[in-house]
Amino acid sequence: MSLYEVFKLVLQQSAEGEALQAVATMQQGTISDLSAPVALSAARLSHELKIPMADSIMLATARAWDATLWTQDSDFSEIPDVRYVDNRTKGSTANHGLQRDADRLSCQTSVCS
Image (cartoon, rainbow, N blue to C red; front, side, top):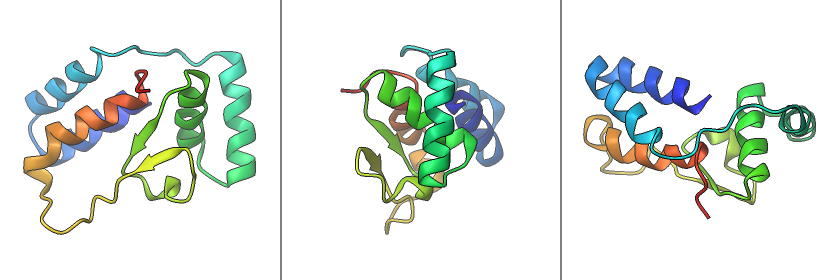
């Protein structure tokens, strides 16, 4: 999911080469397949926290790996074990922060304890 989301976001804001580079950086971490236990956990989280399917899969995956989920998605801003980073902070620019953001988001697919 995060490979999809990061590739799409960077592609919308920049060139395909930069989007591919961001995904290549993410692939240096561990890529986790969606297992049945994680899918069921995600469904429970989606129901309990009222968050979208993709978000609940990301959170369930992070919890299954005992990892920290880093995100700029405001749907996670009130979830205690998630590191929400407000991307609206003063002085940040989309073009200068793309690689840094992709690196931070790579924790969604790798173990970032």
